[in-house]
Length: 226
Image (cartoon, rainbow, N blue to C red; front, side, top):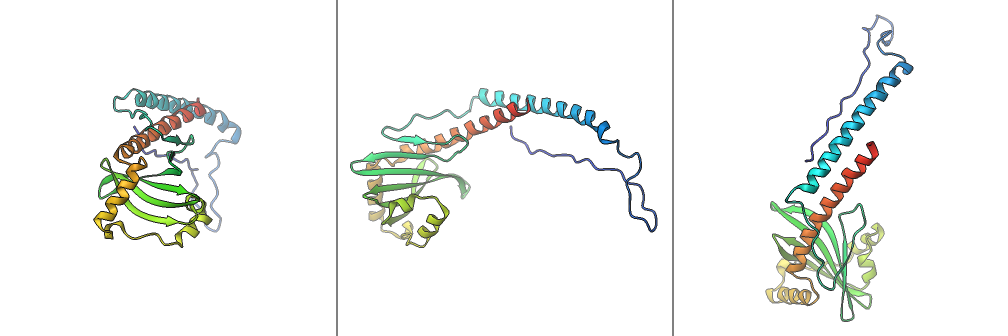
């Protein structure tokens, strides 16, 4: 269970000011540095042991709870790469002479509904289509489509590259497109393995990764203070 932490601060006691003199610490209000050292050492041992016990207890509770997310099975023909310490991930597969790259970009709320956003790049001969998509209530939603002459630039997350991409035409609002064109895009993506089953995997994997990082966080703190 995650809770906010309130930290107390220690302040010195001061004597009342004397007219015409600057305020000075009251003599004897604080012990000297040598006297403080054993007190703070003891306090540190107590606080460390409390935090070690609390993080261990929380970690054990998390690992035993029945609704703990399980790592989902990878969809056929896809590979996944996620760095330890991150909840974002990248998935890849090939389709004929094309490379399909999926970048998971995070979770947000949209009209009170948990929404998982991701970008799909369909690359061929260093040109490509870029699909901005999301998973909402178990269904994949197409939000935007654009074409890029330089696929490498489009997939580069560096600030300079993103600034260049922002200057390029981003494509029309999908809501303004004819239904037949939107359906054609949906069929195009399904042929390349981008479907509701993949959306379900993205949703489940993101929850599993979040849980894995939380447990790793608890374990790292426990080791640090033990």
